[in-house]
Amino acid sequence: MMPRSQLDAEIGDLHARIATLHAHRANLASVLLSQPHLGARLQTPKQSTPTSDAAKRAVELQSKRNLENVYRACAGVTACKVQDPDPNAINNGNILGISIDVAIGGKFIETYHVMLNWKVHDEKKVLRIHKHTIPPCIPLQQLANKWLPQTGKDVDVDPEQDLVRFGKLLRKELVSWHMRVKSVEELRKEVGLPRRSTRQQEEIEFEHTGKVLNAFVSDDEASSDMEEPLADDDTAQIFDIESDGAARQITITWSDRRTAVLGVTKDGRVEKAVCRARDGSRDQTLSRKAIGPLRGLVRRLNA
Image (cartoon, rainbow, N blue to C red; front, side, top):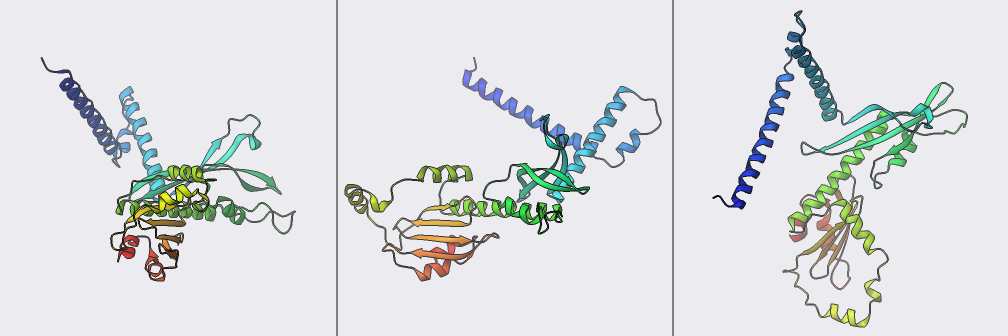
């Protein structure tokens, strides 16, 4: 009789095979329903049958899905109408939704949403942010104040708003942020550090908030730290790479207690660097090496 572990393994293989076949069937169905002349052939004047009606509905749904995918892949910013379920919502619950898709390396990373309501003044709609899912490190309110202003110099006249420019610049901020976060993850991977998500990093920063600084630890703790052996400059390795929530400031720590604080631009380039040796003195040479794109930063520092 076959042992139970082997039976479980074979059952697991069968389930995996079934899932693969289902995905393959769905892919083939999408390709078939996306044929350009299939809809016209189904519209031929013949007797309508339940099968032909179901085929027409499937073609229509696939066509709408293809159009949506094209907009998401090419535009990145799409608008839609949203209904607020709150019975007391303003404007009868009619909300304008903006969906922003972030794709990096040919893959969709995340989708963000901004809900806008409006007020009517002199037969003109003035948009304002209702709800959103934008991370707090993105300057959403600054963009809204510039491109969706509520009041101008003249209180009685509503200023001009540019929703298209607002959506484009907001998406640019989101893509730049994801690119910087990805660059920091690649730096950690390059030096052999475990991957750390943005949420985990924010939790770690919150946990460290309010802790006693090294200068105020007890003499016993200070003496125990000093007893740790220091690595030579030639054998020192990068001990940790941390960044803030916006990935605009990166802190690098070596095993010999050297540190580097880097200021990063929105396009992922190190524009400022302050590197300290183990004795606290400024390391000008290492600071100059750090200037440049994030890609290749570890290679420049180790050169």
